[in-house]
Length: 371
Figure: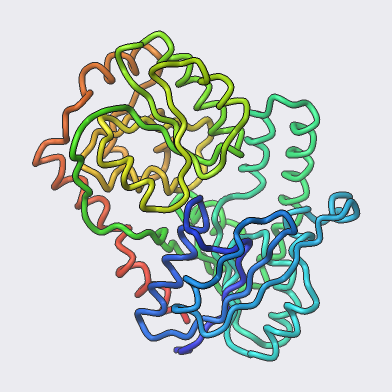
């Protein structure tokens, strides 16, 4: 077993406040706790405000950053833009010089995979999604015609590029559904549950509002927020908070004059946990089934009822922990039924039993066995 590993990440994993950054940050933290030296490489853009590496220095032996190439030529390449923009000769040189096994975080970081594998280094890829399906679904949900075209073109490029994964020694899927898909295409695919910070249920101190949280840069979450704004606009006696690490001008404008709907910015995990302490009901909506959604795991690690539609839980194994609604009428009935009602003792036991699969201490042992 190697006592050192190099991780190539799509972005600065700190702060761990959206999607894949949560999985990466808590994976690094768990590796550190097991005595594994982590050499972290990640890409940044000129516009990025994710420049703080200080909190990562405790857990990483070395940290290296590389600029993404976001020029027009990268957009026009037959290679996916999300991959092409994360291609660096400097990264290749650094990975080879350090010489330890390499874990690529996401298909979009694998531009150097073939070269590094040919140099004789062990290579692993953490698959955060079936990327071409994810981008196609985003495109289908977009309001803008040009964005629809762009995302569908990126989906086509990602599907063609996906064959590059054959150069990895091991692929790690983030869900059992994804493992089934990739196992039909590649030789060694292993399910590695997502890394996150929770091992116990967080208690609610009061029940003041319904909460929806998600990345408001993504069309899937924007559509969900739109639906909930319409729904709660007709329920002035119930409060809704929409929370995100990223503001969205359209959403902010829609709720500007609403007395019962508020937007809250999430700057840290502590901000989100503070919101959880006053949440009466979590409401999570998605219009595409794509792996395990970290926001669902966060919500389930509370003693609060979680209302979801089918795409939020499809293929997750978390169905027994949630209350499903299929339409607006069912959502209305369940909001009224469960508002301010914590889950029962038997539901707590069931929830913790199911969530034990996502204990980071168990997941890190699975990963280390493969290094």
